[in-house]
Amino acid sequence: SQQGEEDPQALSIQEGENATMNCSYKTSINNLQWYRQNSGRGLVHLILIRSNEREKHSGRLRVTLDTSKKSSSLLITASRAADTASYFCATDRGGGADGLTFGKGTHLIIQP
Amino acid sequence: DAGVIQSPRHEVTEMGQEVTLRCKPISGHDYLFWYRQTMMRGLELLIYFNNNVPIDDSGMPEDRFSAKMPNASFSTLKIQPSEPRDSAVYFCASSLGANTQYFGPGTRLTVL
Image (cartoon, rainbow over all chains, first blue to last red; front, side):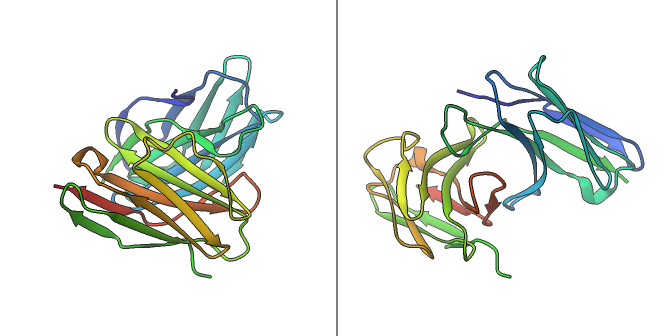
């Protein structure tokens, strides 16, 4: 079953604007990760936030986690054309199982 | 350092044929994961190995799919016989511990 669900499914903004993507999940997690996938390529890890963390920054990325609402957000500030990609949240599968469960992703388009 | 290497990058075959996908994980990583990505179902975990041992193959769709990891630097995913509904992009990913995963470029499989 789908653990992470991203919202929106697609987002188009102008270069320089901020982009916010959301992820909701169903069961308890140990950590949540965000990945980026450029067209025709593999996924690239962006950031990991643990269940006891509320916010984390990495460069132009800001991730928040609200375990009470079972949701996370990814903010990309000052977007660039190169940020055009699909963004996926991934959660651990819980119950001691390894591996990740991915959402279907948000397709982000940055208009130059 | 070389990332995860997958071959072939593209495979076109006819229904009923055997297909073998190959993966070389990052040296030193102890986990290897096989995923399948389709528009309809998103990214699905098929099977993963820890220290060359298959741990969870519950995501393998049916007996036509099999995976092996004969040593720490090589894994195969085999489909026999292949069917058109197996058409997808197959990703291999490796990790040190079961957190951040590093993905290969994927194999785009088309079964006619």
